[in-house]
Length: 216
Image (tube, rainbow, N blue to C red; front, side, top):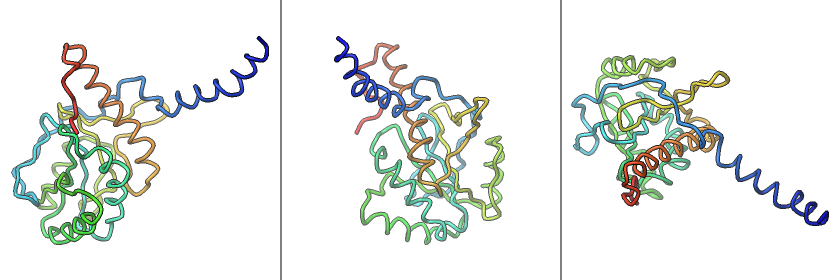
């Protein structure tokens, strides 16, 4: 009996503890709304010519800025840590809002990513810097855009156009810094899984458990 207890303590208990913490603390809670009902996009030009909207989509939203080519490493980090893992899910979209005049820079970045990634699910919208700043201000976030109308942060927007993040006493997080891969692979990935769990739980509650939330 004592031998079994020692074996359990040495081998089984550490594995159970690892699985618990690896799943992330937020996996057992609902991800808070940090900014409710943000406005949808205007009729801005997209790189593909298709209309892009927030409604009824889980959106990873970013602001590329006029220095997007210089800061292309941020997109490469997001592509590696999040996009490649989830981009084929039908309810998810990646949207970057960029100033007019950066279209050719974005094409160069997409050509580079296209060498090892299916880039068809990247969405880019282009409008004036003034429109971008006005739109960002309507998100009512604590952060701000830089003088290039960009930010390294990306935001999780749910299907009801709410920005989701963390609002507990110890940590406030409205966006995830693409300059730091660890921020994406830890906090953002953990929080994104919470959003998926919420929608799957809602489907199950509505007796639609057999309907896939995000179909590969």
